[in-house]
Image 1 (cartoon, rainbow over the protein chains, first blue to last red):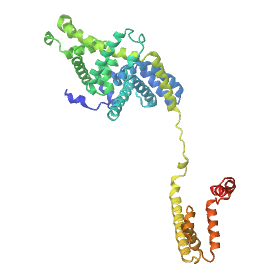
Image 2 (image 1 turned 90 degrees about the horizontal axis):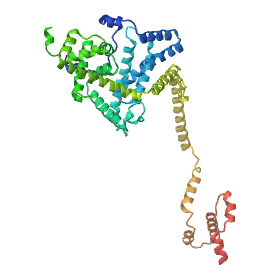
Image 3 (image 1 turned 180 degrees about the vertical axis):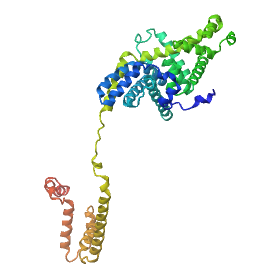
Image 4 (image 1 turned 90 degrees about the vertical axis):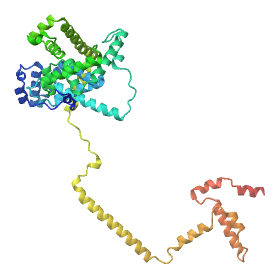
Length: 227
Length: 210
């Protein structure tokens, strides 16, 4: 596996036709998951014109996936407000394009692809903005604005240490190659298996494993073995 | 069993971690080796802790920010966006764009003809007017201009000084000049005459003093 394989454009390539995927991966014939079944039902209701019912079902899908989606988006964008927007847009896009959803893909795979492509677009546009405009005052990090004793650790010192540790980790993740970063995030932040990551990224499963291992090795080197 | 007497490589350890994390059974030969080899077991533990800590840290960080309230707000925002997306777009027509574009060529040609005819008429009119103008028609304008040029409003005194020597009809000239002075010193506008009558003038005061 040569290193140039990971230097390709970051955006995830279009989804392969479901028939071809099913032929390549026997696992695609696995029992249909609850969210996939729900997505198929929503699609059928939209096709019948029963949009209100479809939307009430869709809110269940949102509830099921939004926490994981927010984690992934936040790790990509490192900005809670932008991550929020990215998640919202991804869900809206899912509902608007539900007619094109095919159950050969698990819903989670389809949705995550949409989300990640949205996040990558946002990263690209942010990089463009930063090239042309001087940023205003950055302000404190978002977790620094959280009230002490809130959702996080109530001890200020522990919070400070956690913030530094997280910043170090985020910086190390950011130093990874585009593909390695995507694959690593999906696997370790999005709780996806290498097979699911393969389906999301369109990469071969063994390639995903190689990327994962290289990313982990690099991270250990960047962080000196301590996260 | 030949390959497993040596220590497990890092990629093999990582593979074991992924398999174990996915809830599947680790390759029995690798599992046996890990059970027997303290060095590999230690490396495996370190790797597992490192990766688990990274994942947990990231999840905690995101969860601190995305509280249940915020997620609820996010869900509401999604519903609102779907509402907006479901509503048909309203097209606002602007007055300037109401004229259909396909009628424009005819209108434009007609407008051009009208403009050309008006210009031609103007040119012909000016030419004819210049040619057939009565001989005295231009004079009043010229004489008015001359009068304005020769009788500046601010120089009544100079007029008196440079007045020619009295001629046989000197009284007439004097009267004329006096009237001229009066005319220049008093407003000509009818609306202002009443105000002027109420206003004391320097010349009248001077006359009284004398």
